[in-house]
Each structure stands twice: as structure tokens, then as C-alpha cells.
Image (cartoon, rainbow, N blue to C red; front, side, top):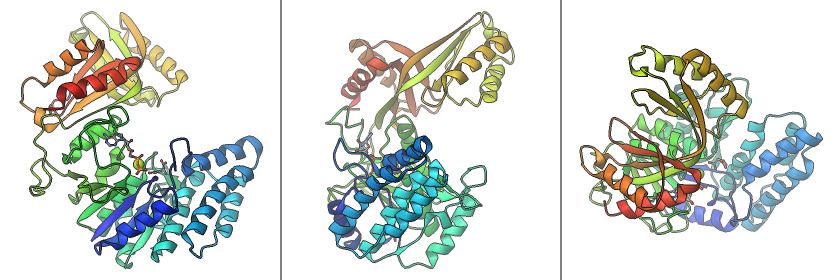
Length: 443
Ligand code: ADP
Ligand code: ASP
Ligand code: MG
């Protein structure tokens, strides 16, 4: 028995949905289908989720979302008529329009793409529709309730012979809708896979599998046959957004492998994401590489602090961390020297005001000799279990960046030797990824 999740490109238009239908019908093990909202039909197109957020903003600015929502309604009407299914979505759109115009939340608006996409897919496939709001549970403060969800979903799924479930959202105890972060339908797929107790979670997307680098930067990046949950977590958190980094948490509880596959090339073998390096996936999927993959993201901020005798000052790091906690700023990395300590934070997650007040508070509490904020830092991670106790990878990383003329602003290596992370300037990001790929591709 399988759970299959189809991403935005797979749901983008009637042709791709027909292709989804062919994939599901050709595999008798298919049981539960999780879908995203329709994504881009071509490069310049807008995802339905973004159109829906625009509806919410339109209502905020002008008091009504009607014309913005009409664009979404037209997209779905085109899909329904092209698929030639009997499904009248006018009542659904009336309800959505009324809800947004009466003040429904941004999460509610954003979630409707998946809701409608699942209704369409269920009608087209002749399967039951199960609303994620009934089985995916969040607390009243918005925290995902993993165990309650698993119990509720398991019961509901056991009573179904096959169903389509919208990705991306669930509900809080009062019934109001709450979404995961962007790309969160991957997480829903994983929750459904665990609750249904399937043998594999197939995640269908628009590329042949997980590549050693972002194919938009390195078009000839190689396909990774197999990677572990931990490698996935490092790579996807660092920017390989082919799969949401939280997708492993539900499946990890039951050691269910995730198989990434291409809707538009179903014959490709894809990438298998497995619990541990020792997982026996047969000879078909293997990973003998030292470096499994390279990923990165721009727009981090470094707060550098310098203080004489910092190393002998008991509690310095605790003070730094407590200030960050007080301002609700989470840290990505904390590289240090004898008299220096830096914290790296995600610049897209902190506002200028929060950063300014955090830095000033840190100055008063930690009394450093010098405190400096450096913006526009990109982090690049080289990831692979194979690096553990193997000499030479770091040397290759640094010499490749040196030869490419990239200045390294920061270095961090986790104690498990699963990753080497370097901070470079935003402007050097693509150059760094390309140089590392060339240097490490044979490893
Ligand atoms: P979906 O809509 O199916 O969820 P996404 O757009 O979320 O698809 O993820 C697939 C995209 O991820 C690919 O089209 C590719 O551009 C991008 N991507 C980023 N890093 C990688 C990588 N290392 N390997 C493969 N694809 C990657
Ligand atoms: N539709 C949502 C997004 O665009 C969730 C997803 O596609 O996974 O982020
Ligand atoms: Mg995605």
C-alpha cells in the first residue's frame, strides 16, 4: 500500500492531472493521494497559493477580494471543463469569497488551493475526498499535534478504501485553518503515510529526483540514488527545497522510505530517502559517495562579537543565547574562536527592528569589546555521511573556493562530520556552488 503526493506542477493543468491519473491507475498499490494546489504552468505563471494570498491582501487593502478571487475561480473552471468532470465549484467559491470578505485568516485563504485541488482530483479519479481539516490537528497556539493527528488520521483512513486529501493545512481545535510553512504539502504526505502505515511514501514532482546540486544553478547535476533522512534534513533546510525539511519527522517514526519521482518521466528510478545509511534497499538504490549533495541559501546575517578573555568568562554563551531567546530569534550556527563568537541568523526571518534591538541588548548584557553585524551572507552546505573519518574533503572545499576567487566569511562543521558549512557573500553564492560541484562531483 502506498501514499502518493503530487506537487504543484503535477496539478497545474488538466494535462498534468490526467498524467497523475495514469500514474495512480497503473499502480494497484496506490491508496491515498495527497495533492498540492495548482502550481505554475510555465515559468512566468503564478502559483494558485500565491494568487490566494493576493486575495487576502486585496481584502485587507480594499475591503473585498472579489476580482482577485475571480482569477482563481477561472483557473479552476478551466481545469474542470478541460477534464470534462461533473463538478460545480460555484458554491465553494461563494463560500470562500464570503469567508475572506468577512475576515477569514491568511492561512485560510492560502489553504483553499489545496482544498479545491483535492476536490477536483477526487472527482476526476472517482475517489473519496477527505478534508485535511478533519484529520490534521494543530493546538490553539498553532503547534502541530503529531500524536493526536496520527490517531485521528489513522482511524479515518482505516475506514476508507482510497481517498484524495488536500496537502498543506489542518485545523486548530476551534476549526480555524492553520497551514504548514510553504511547501508543506510534503509534510502532509508524510503524516498520511505514517497514519496509513504504508510501505512507501511516493513524492511525485517535476524532476527525476534529488540532484547533487540545485539544477537551476548546475543544470548537469547528477541524480542522487539514495540519501538518508539526516542528509535530507541538512540539504533541504539549507535550500534544496525539492522536499520540505520537516517531511521526515512523521515517516521517521515508522521508518517509511520516501521515494521521489517525476510525474513527467515516471520511468525514471528517482531517489530513495531512507532511515539510515545501512538501510537495505537492494542493489537498485545505493549511495557510495563521500559527498552526497551540496545546497545553500542566501540572506543570512552574522553578528560577530569580540571580547578579550572571552574563553575564560563563564556564562558568556549563555548570555548571548538568552538575549536571542528573549527576542525570539533562532540561530542557525554559532562559530567561535578564543576571543570571538558569532551567531548566524536567517535574515529572512528577522525584521530590522528585531535585529537592532537584539544587537543593542546583547551589547548591554554581554559587554563585548566589539560587536559587528554583517548582512548578505550566503551559507553553503556540503553534506554526506561518507565524510565521516575520511580525510581531504575540507581541503578540497577550501581550495575550490580559493581558486574560484570566493572569500570565505565563516566555517562550521557539525561534530557528526555530516556537513561542512561555509559562509560566503551573497554575490559569490552561485560561483561557490558551481566551484564546489566541479571539485566534489567525483567524490
Ligand atoms: P512540487 O511543486 O512538486 O512540490 P517543488 O517546486 O517544491 O515541486 O520542488 C521541485 C523543484 O525543486 C525542482 O523543480 C527544482 O527546481 C528544485 N530543486 C532545488 N534543489 C534541488 C535539488 N537538489 N534536486 C532537485 N531539485 C531541486
Ligand atoms: N501550495 C503550497 C505552497 O505553494 C504548499 C505546497 O505546494 O506544498 O507552498
Ligand atoms: Mg514542493
